[in-house]
Image (cartoon, rainbow, N blue to C red; front, top):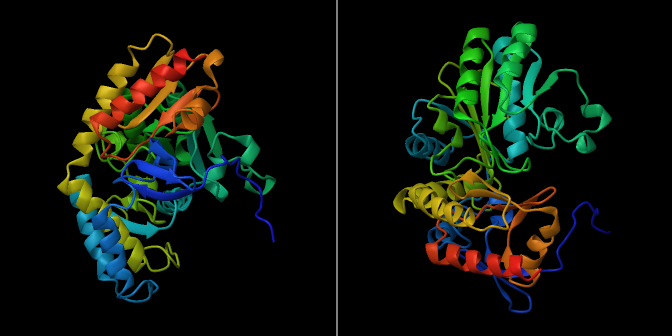
Length: 378
C-alpha cells in the first residue's frame, strides 16, 4: 500500500527535537520557527510534558466518555483560570476542524437557525460545515456545498451590518479568526470584533471565536479576540493545546445548557490528551509564556519592520506574517535549505512565523541575522 499523496513534502526527515531545535536524519540542526503549523507551544520534548504524558500512559491511556475522567475536570478548571474565563464550559474533541464543526452545530441548536457568516480569507478546517465556511473553493467537495454560508469582506463593518439587516433573523453564528493564519496573518480590527459582538447580541446570533491557530497564548493574550475587550459565545481551540498530542476543545459561555447526546466524541478528552493539555497549561502558567510571546514577538516585529526589503509585517506576539515582493518569493525555501530555519508560508509571498511560545531573544536574533543574509543573497 502507498500513502495517499496529498502533501507536498520537503525532503527532510526529523529524528530528534528539543525546545525550538530539531535535527534531521543526517544530523543537521534546524531552528524551528513554525512548530508544525503552530502546534508546538511549549517547545519540543519539554521534560515536564514528557513526564506528564509518560506517567499517565503507565496508568491508563484511554477509556471512553462513558466513565468519570477526573483529568477532564482538572483540565477545565485549569483552562478556565489561565484563559480568564472560569465560568465557561469545556467540551473536548480532537482537532481544530472538529472544534469548529461542533461550535457551529452548537450555535444552530441554540437558536434553531442555519445561516453562518464567515469572511474572505478564512480557514476553519476541512470537515463538512467547517470547510464550507473556509474561503477556498478548491477544497470544498460538491457534498460540502451549501447556501447557508455568507462570505463577507474581512474587516468591513458596513458589509456586516448590511448582511444582518438582510438575513439577521436567519443567522445562527458569525465565525471569525482573531488573526487569519492561512489567509496571510491578517488581524481582525478591534472595532470589527466589537461590531460582531453587538450585532450578534441584537439578532440573537452567536459569536464564534476561531482560536485554533491564533489562540492559546500565541499573541500575548490567551485568545487573540481578547484584544477587543468583548467575550465570544464560543472559543474553539486546538493546535497549541496539546504540544503535538491531538487534542482540541470548545469553551462555551454559561448561557448554553447542555443535554445528554447534544455533542459527542469517542477519543475527545481521553486520559493521554488531558495529561498533555494539562502539561501545556502548567508550563504556560509557570513560565509566563504569554508574557514571553508578547515580548519576543514585539521585538521580532519591530526589527523586521526595519528591513527595507520587507513589504509589510503583520501580526501580534508570536504569530507573525512577513510579506515579501514577488522577486523574493524563494526566500522561505532558502531559509530552510540554506540557512536551516523552518518557517511557514501563506500564498503567494508571506512567510509565517509560529514558533514555540518560549522562543528566546537569542533565537529571534539568530533568525533575524539569517533572514537578512537570505534577502541579500539574491
